[in-house]
Amino acid sequence: MEWNAIAPMRWVADAMVVLSNTPAFDWDRVLQQARRRRLVLTLQTMAPYLRRLVAAPIPDTVIRNLKSLPVTELERDWMKIRTRGISRLTVRDLFRVRFGLYKRSALSVRFRPAIFGFPRYMQCVWGMDHWWQLPMRGLRTVWRR
Image 1 (spheres, one colour):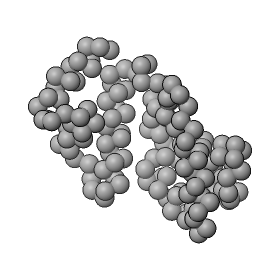
Image 2 (cartoon, rainbow, N blue to C red; image 1 turned 135 degrees about the horizontal axis):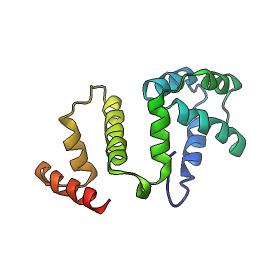
Image 3 (cartoon, one colour; image 1 turned 30 degrees about the vertical axis):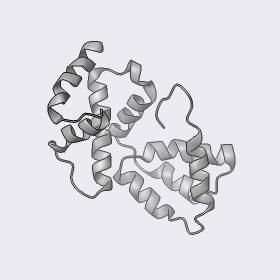
Image 4 (cartoon, rainbow, N blue to C red; image 1 turned 90 degrees about the vertical axis):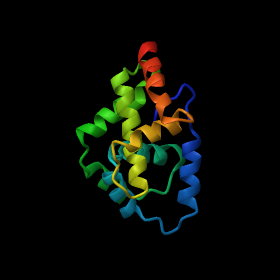
């Protein structure tokens, strides 16, 4: 659910493949992970869309349960940042997006994200050979903004 100049509709096909080929889909786990990873607002938006667009087999109870889940202010801010388009983001917003993605990826490997792991993450994102190249790249980004 991120802004893109070309609408990335392939996620719809991906979702349908998963839903169609997983008869015992664990919706309780999806809801639990949505809360844990702060993706409730994303799912509240996308699940009904999938049902309307391609008749995705999402139970009514799941849609109701999604609507009842609390959405944090951080999620609302995150959604605004992600859907604005990168060219309209401030440097602060860019940092928040990247750090948010880093924290979310750190959750997926079951360890607490450390502030010192973030430079390594950015080194990979920007395709740099050495961590010491980061400050110059960061300055170039700030200068361009």
